[in-house]
Image (tube, rainbow, N blue to C red):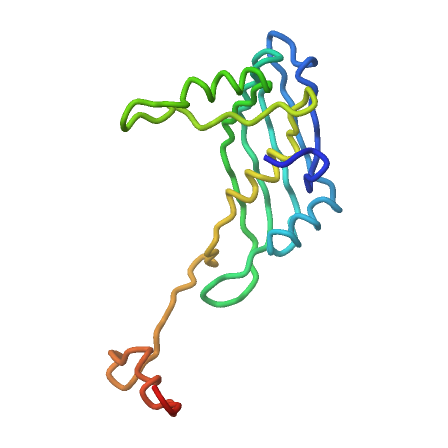
Length: 180
């Protein structure tokens, strides 16, 4: 996670404000924030980015669950045409205060051979707050398809006459440089 001041989307929630019964929070990115996220992540326009979260815990440990959803334009890797798509990513993150995080790390400092922690390392509560904007941006990035394909788009290789020619066959016809 990034610090709140470095986040493209920042919505800090003070852990002291989380009641014992829990807290429901919705983060909705503004038009300017969506434009900056699209620029940074190399997508087309993002018309909607919303994180819906449930926070539970104490000032020592906050558990955040929820969903990040977006509607955006991506470019098809097959046709190179832009197309509208939706993204949905589940969120399950734990934040701990610095002392609690140090205790957690110490418990796994010298694990038995082959033993690993049962869960991912928690994120740190910074300045008494968790930044749900940063969580929204991070899970948006995680949910993006790295090879977006427009529905129905299929790669068709049009090789030589028999259709079995390797795409590398043309390389043999390239001029060679001295010493190669």
